[in-house]
Length: 454
Image (cartoon, rainbow, N blue to C red; front, side):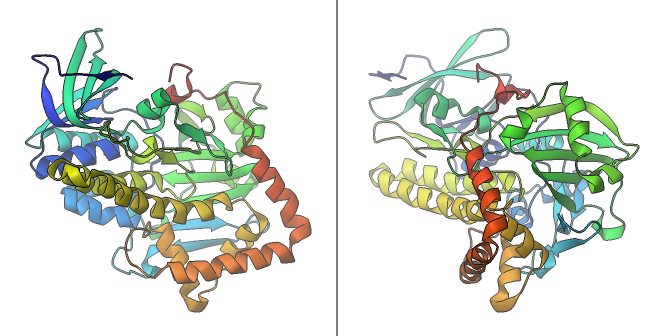
């Protein structure tokens, strides 16, 4: 990326160019337009398009209400009242954390959704806003920053035609594609956590009865953990988040390896007896990363939002919630930077602190999810000093408000470390194995984000 002196003549201008039409980008475009800003929204693909990450969190519900799309999401989603965890050592023993038992009882459910429908809904909602110019099939190719910090962006459509926009601010919401992080070389793989996944959509998978039908099910196994996410149309999203060293052993087609992996977890295998894969099975590589910068230096007005900045792990279904929460905060921050550019740096520092607060709260638990002490604590929760309520609040996505979860979570952490020490002979080898994974690279992914040109 270069710095240019001035904007070429006849180039369309906008206040904010948002790159990426997923939940973060579409949400941000809608909110900025409501604040009176002119927004250009670019999406590389066409909606509907496949995306994994079908499980939403209860604290996403007030965001959807504010956007004005809650009723539409209710039409496409399957109600989810909780998260079910299955005991790794005792077959048939399971525990469901119901969101109604969180500290805030006001959001007792969420939804399971097809991301193709959910993402498309948010994009079309953004397109309808006055002030939003939305484009699909548009791939960003290069960005140059002018002396005043504004951006000159060049994209190509599917016919290869070049298009340019001049924007006072550029927001990268390109998710795992991470246009700016990759171009700037600022995306760093996590050195604390690494995992890879293999997954697909199936029909004929056994569902839980009654009001538990929509709950996500989590199963541990020797190489990681499984998710089973029921969707409204009878489909079940089934995936295994594994240590990279395990997926590197794949020596057969992805579908066959997925079935082999399912066979390693008897309870998952039993629920999938007679099931049939719908569509293709997919694998994806190490997806735990964080950019070394969240926003541009003084001469470059750019900001990373959602998965473009960081992604931890899908275990607590936090991706969509962090993306949309980040978009709400980004709308406030970018609008303020446009209105009061002299306060730009202070506004961006405050924005970074807010985003990292949520990320760090999730990441401590996620980095230890496969550890022996965490498995035991999850399957025998205690509500002393409201610890269980705090954990459920975290599972519900309540990490950005003033809900008093942090005191109980600190106590939970202390109990975790004490449990680790008490079970050192069994816990330490598993911990060493987990940490070793961060240095193992899995390159056998089959999604577009895993391909070299990305």
